[in-house]
Figure 1 (cartoon, rainbow, N blue to C red):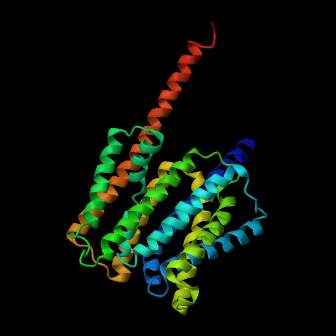
Figure 2 (figure 1 turned 180 degrees about the vertical axis):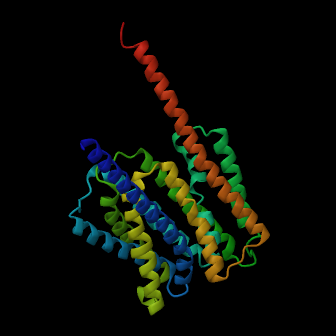
Figure 3 (figure 1 turned 60 degrees about the vertical axis):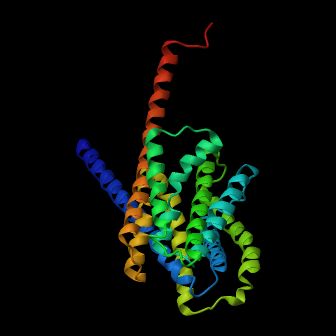
Length: 335
């Protein structure tokens, strides 16, 4: 009888784990879809409002939502001095710079191409890690960088975008700078010792990003009275603010931590793919044969870079384990 109850409890536990894993998978896939769709949504938004004010709206609305969420969970926490550098880094580079540059770029370039170039961060991370931290890239990482940057060159070439419009190459350049900004933050996050959780810091980061962007938007795009408020714009802002930023950040922080970094990296690879497909389907954007070649090269480069990081981490883990075993048999602290 006791054995039967134990088996029943184990089956119930397995069923619960399956339900949880399925719900996690659904949330993560939904997050990727929402992030991907946000690119054509932002492209539509720049037709109604200046791009820098849209960036302000994105993070101000998202910050409010996350503060309310934190109050509901009784999990609002003031940042400590230890977390101030990472807050500044994420607010300035990942949020303010990345989003502002991306929004401005989409006034010149298609949303699908913008999402592809902007999500080339794994490629730039390899180069920046070498330049800033002297992390020697592996051969596979060098192949990834060569393939991916080759794709960016193809995607940004006159064969893919209209260079007769002076804004097109400028837009591509802004997206490359945006990707580099995000790459710097990724490397900073890897080395930061957290005091609060990323979710606890997110509302403060978004609020700071909004504060940084307001004077810049006012100086470049004029006062916020230039925004053409329409019901369509309100819906677009609600989508790329509270939904695609606040909600997706909660999913990424809460559910994403239950899967490996490798799995999360593979998932986010779907964002530019969905962004490109959605832009073709809903905005009527076209992907020429040359652009398709650039698309394949960029996605392949990102995928190779992600796999290379995984492979490098496994090699380092094996080396660490081997060294630990050697220390156990041949202690170096004994004289």
